[in-house]
Length: 109
Image 1 (cartoon, rainbow, N blue to C red):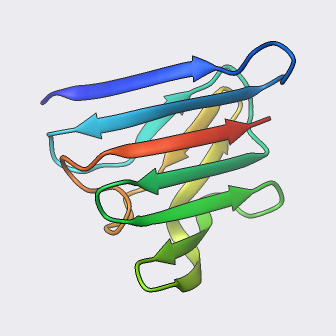
Image 2 (cartoon, rainbow, N blue to C red; image 1 turned 135 degrees about the horizontal axis):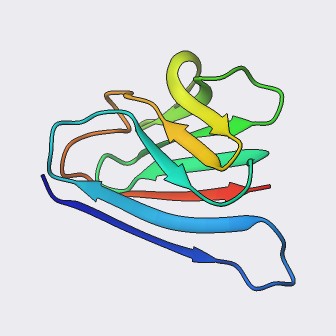
Image 3 (tube, rainbow, N blue to C red; image 1 turned 90 degrees about the vertical axis):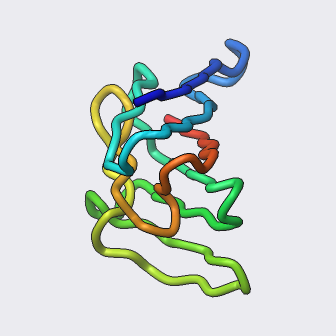
């Protein structure tokens, strides 16, 4: 399995913000992203599938608001985003987390 993951911190003037990308050619599965802080907001975009989901502080673990192609917007209660003390987990949602499709993300603490 090949995993390509990049990440960069935003300049010091903006604290606790990280951006990156993730691409895996292995079997799709939930995975963790390490940012070094617990996020208050996370957005994960599937660039190839033209959809995204967002998690906001106050939402439950594994929840997200998902936007699909065609403008369909719905609340997810499973397989979404789970904040961690050091980053977040991207759940195994079959529209977002797809083998060999490019994901880009932003996390704000």
